[in-house]
Image (tube, rainbow over all chains, first blue to last red; front, top):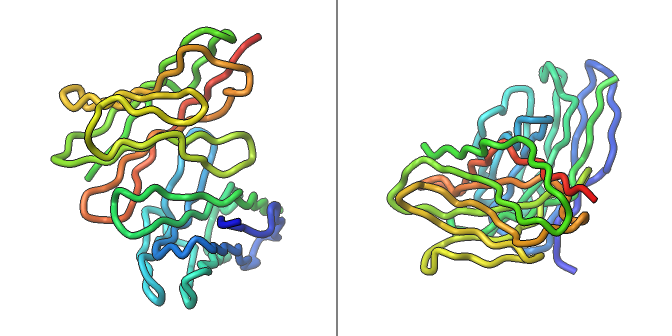
Length: 113
Length: 113
């Protein structure tokens, strides 16, 4: 089955630690995205990548980093510089072009203790 | 830049009653519009999309939406809701010139027995 997987489903982190969230897709999509979701605020774009080895900052990139070494993978690192990292993180992918819908993974809930 | 407004943060409705969830977007020469549904602690699933052509778009689970260019709206409707429709619904527009989506803040639909 084609789709997007995110792991882990739940993640706990101590303050001051970096943590990496995994996102893998087997849809052969060129574009991948990371969103942060907080109650009442909808989805906010963290980073996106239109092609391997290239990515752009979204609206709230501070305190986050990404890499895109493979077409299938787009891991997100939440660094200790992110002041309020507790949130629900969603990964998505799409084909090239504005008309292509984004397909979403099941999400990772990160809690900072 | 595009923007999306979902005026209703919560919509309670009784089972088997009709419902309309409102979405307005900022004006653009060309626009691609999407509605997504999110069940608790899950990713987003595409309900329907408008790219061009007929202004009435039918989607999954009995939902439909009407694109109204003069009112810059893309309201989501269902003639008879079920308990299982309880979820959060997001409207999104594809930004001009990029692969980015602009999401609304979401509308929480609660279907009452």
